[in-house]
Structure formats: C-alpha cells, structure tokens
Length: 391
Ligand code: PLP
Image (cartoon, rainbow, N blue to C red; front, side):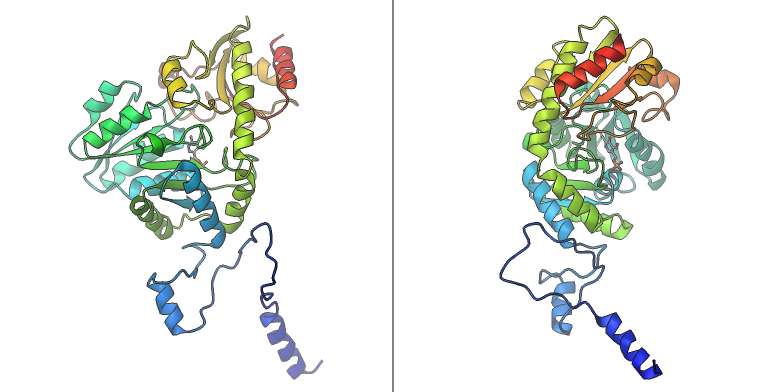
C-alpha cells in the first residue's frame, strides 16, 4: 500500500461511524450515550450552550442524556423538583452536605448512620472547619438540644442499618426548619416505593443507586433529590469534585428502576412474612423489623409506611457463624443489600467494624446479629432455607 493510500485510510477510519440519520421509528429503550464530548455546529451554538441558554450537552462530567433521564425518573418517584445523579451514594451524600456546609457551620446527625457516612462526618468535615454533633435521632429532645444558631443541616436515614429504627421525618423536619436548618434524609433502605421523605418535609433526599433503585447489584451510583436550587448547588459540587455518574450506570439503573414498584411489593411481603415467623422461633433471640408490634417505633412506622417497609430485617442468633455456614449456597454472605436475591451480612465484622466494641454493643450490634436483605424469591423456599439453618 502506498503512503498516500495509508494516510487516506487513516483519515477514513478516524472519521468513520457517522451518526445514523434519525429514522421515522425511535428505539423503545434509550441508547447509551457513551460519547464524552459533544460537537457544536458553530460558535453561536457553543456560546448559547456554555452560557446555559440552550439545552446542550457538552462534556461527560457535567451531564449525559442517560444521567438526565435517570434524574427525571428519580425526581418523579421522590416527588421532588429535581435530582442530580452521582458516581456513588457517598458522592451524593458528600455533595449534598458540602453544598450547604462551610467553615464555621454545624451539622447534627443521627449516630446510627451508615459507617462511611459516619466516618465522613467524624473525620473529614471537621478538617474543613465544620462542626459535627452525633445524637440519638430517636430522642427528639436530644436533637432539639443539639441544634445551634450555626446548624445548617440535620442528617438522618429514613430506616437505619442494621436495626431498622424509623426516623420521625415530619418531626425532624419541623425541628430543623424551626432552627433555620435543612433536613437531609438518606432514603436508601426504604426506596421511594415505600417512603418519600420530601412529602414529609425533608429538603435533601439521597440514595445509593446500587441498592433498591437499580435492584440487581449490577449498577453503581448515587442521587440527590430535592428543591431545584438545592439540587443545582449539589450538582455544582459533583461537577467540581468529579463525582458524576457514568452513562452506563445511569442506563443500567433505569432498567432496574422500571420494576421498582413490583420488586418492592415482593421484598416487603417476604420480609414481613419472615419477620413474623422468626420472631416466634425458639432459636432466634430477637428480630428487628418495623412491621412487628415488638418494634419500638411500630406505631410511627405504621403511620409513615402504609405500603410496607421494604426488604430489610435483622435477627440475632446464638451462633452467627453456624447459621451463615448452614445457609451457604442458598443465601450468600455478601456485604451489600437490596438485590432481587436474598443476601446476609454481618454488621459486627463489616459495616460497623470501625466502631469500638463498646460502641457496637451500645448500639445493639452484637456478634450474633445478622442483617438479612430479603429478596423476591418464593417465600416458601426462603422459609424452608431459614428453618433448615436454624434446626
Ligand atoms: N447510605 C446507605 C444507607 C448505605 O447502605 C450505603 C452503602 O451501603 C451508602 C449510603 C453508600 O453508598 P455507596 O456505597 O453507593 O457509596
């Protein structure tokens, strides 16, 4: 091949793959827009796009069509004005908090929050001059007492990990607002199918997308939902800190999201049935599920969660190692949650291992405690597996 022909082929190959012209038909399922950059027809269009005067995608870290589709879906489900997707649940929580807090500000948080959120609040935010108070958010007087004139945010989880305590979101919103602060709620354990914090006064709602919103342990991301101005501020932090979601993960999450309502009905029904059976089992010391009358916030849960409580519960047994071993091959030990398949986790050695032994025991996290993410399998099979493991 001559040099000239090789050069021509090089150009041809580089410029090949022109976009297919739009047809009269549209794909039923949205395409994945993997392009990291968008081409503008001229300088006027570039100017309008960059100045925000025209709807124009331009760079992957700022926004992708797949991210926007997911954001609109989550905002619709949570009943909020807007949503911004993130690369992980922690990116979403970090952006939500950093968009409101600055040096000299104060944040109050429930001491039961997810371990990495706890570490973010305990170890990272104080390095930037942000003061943090950890309280028992079930004690509303303690929350009220912790609020200060410079408190900007009160942060809680709607259902907590692993003991399934229920945040009194309407009361917490009232306390936050009375002190000029925002209420931020991590709604990961509940999902908007069973609880929508914004309907009860929350200002910022966050999720880890790899849990119920996607539902199959195949997509990774996070989301912040809320009022348009608050979401815009969080989005700015995500763009500047580089924490936006990938197009593929947004697309994958959308595929899971379509069945959220059906999945949550099955998760909730199975978890309630298992909690009912296990609470009377002689080999089970204790069951933690908001649908049990023995649960300390049963009345509150019943009022706030008319459609069920999702698929999470915890149980305390004499010998957790034996229980896990007997379930092996049927219900895997996997340190995540919310898959369509049931999984178990051991909070003592995973999510809460950063806490001292005394703190873990004080919070009710013992070596015999197992967290059960109840899947959508047939309930009779799940009950048979559990019965066999407890024999
Ligand atoms: N919030 C809760 C309640 C979680 O359980 C998790 C992770 O397990 C997160 C936030 C963090 O999400 P991610 O792992 O997507 O960063």
